[in-house]
Image (tube, rainbow, N blue to C red; front, side):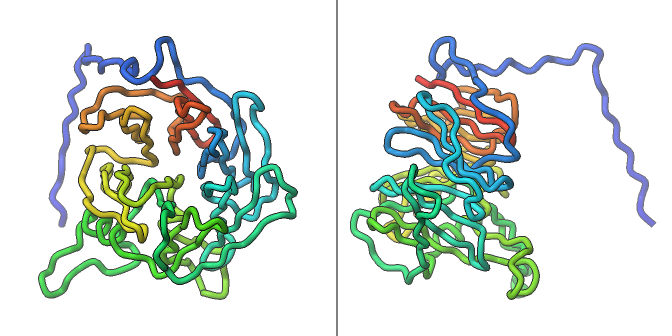
Length: 318
């Protein structure tokens, strides 16, 4: 028989009010979060081109959209072959990670080109790249659900931190390389629900699960979210796309992280929490909807784009 359990919750008649969020340290004077567009099913997977123009995915509706201050919202591709996440190469071509196929698919095209024009990139064995940047997930989810994490010799479970570190520091055997060789995407294993001959079920991988990509040069320090731990890490990028010098940066992690031109780190975790380069929280930006992805764009990279399920928001930073 289970013991009876009791709990007590005391609610005072005049509970203390939490402090109002203050974003003045990072937003330009008088700036607020503005809704740019809405009516989407669920958007994420965004990337910006060299001019700062935003491109993003509404996966359910099979669309790749673009948005700029001059042109507003546009449909870049309709019925776009199961797009999930986007990235750009240095030649201005858009790389699209698609959920089509048992191991997912990557294809590329030039924005503004005909809908019939695209090139499928085949995964190839990993090899060294001179001066190439790496495309990586911004948020990672590691909870050991596809493998027994109990060590029967020590009777110890692998921790979430250990799972994340192993995933992020283990080289991938294959990769997708852009046609101009300027960027590459490490191709991790795709787990599939159901028989191998049926790709209609759920599939999982670091690249498919993330709400967006970041692109970084080898040696660059980046910030990524270990979403299962609820921790944001800083790390340096190796030439093969693995991470090194992993350090917990903030005891808060969520759907996305982005860095402004001043080195401040913006973390999407219900709302947007901003940390100085030293890891001290300096601001909080409240958005009308839960943010899924944060990315900086605009000609001066001072526009913080906030992608939520159903709407696109933006705010101007210092």
